Image (cartoon, rainbow, N blue to C red; front, top):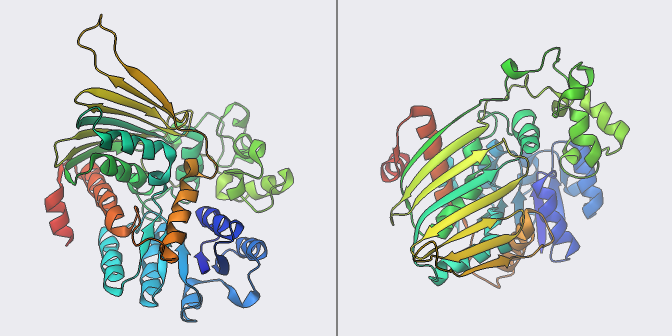
Length: 416
């Protein structure tokens, strides 16, 4: 089995590492505009020079060279690359979001179905022990029907600063709105748990903190020359030097020595003051969802948390479920008749697993490899299942900007 990867940094590397290290597939080609990252990938996966490409156009121009392609490039490159891959008959593992444009998402879905190509979206949370366990509890009917859910994605203040203030996803016009780029995972999980299409959606949020008016006195535009750096938690030296060799320092430069990172921070986007970047995406957003089966959801997406985690409370007819994926714990409580009565409660520890996203990266790749090997005909994150979360995100962003509650059937009709 031969795979090509478009986008050799970040998520693309995680997926390739699994295929290569498990010997389930050969990484036969790499497409990466950054010469340093391209060389690192080529050396790691032993890719010959003739199969190393600077651009996707150059790669696709050679015809079909592999069995499948992993598209892990920037958001706004997905559409063109996916459409060219489908035209050549490639099956695709497509990093989320499918596209930052709603109509392009639908066009990719239609084209894949017309051509018989499999497009698997990287909604890795469906493959984690934590969310799989939640799904099994809900589907068992032990607590009756779901009535309402409170869900929080706690982005983490340093993750917010790295990825959505300084980094690649800081501007919606260059990548995607925060609700799509970061939270299509969550909208997908909520829809999967609820088991229904959406009826209405409303959203509120803004960029409230990471802007110049909140910059410390005497601060400058770059951390390495800033008089206020010592007291600032967002000082790039504090963020990256203690974690050399791993994310997020690994995104700054391929030279993961202290000297290499410091040199990169002189000119890198990651050395900029978080209060003086060109970012425009929300740093906090609240979304309210009503599903067609009557379930209501409040979803809080916030960059103002200490940990990177997801917490959830599912309220059912006969009990409630609380979960914290940073602790890998799920607490199930059966309701009591009154405050004096004893009640049944148990805690499930879903266990620590290897691999990124709580083991979701590995689960996704195992699913994708089985599909390519024709050991299964379906995937739980095929584009037909994954697209609902994207349309929800587009509707939520429209609601946030317009102040109007989005009727989902009408929103979908307008798209089509």
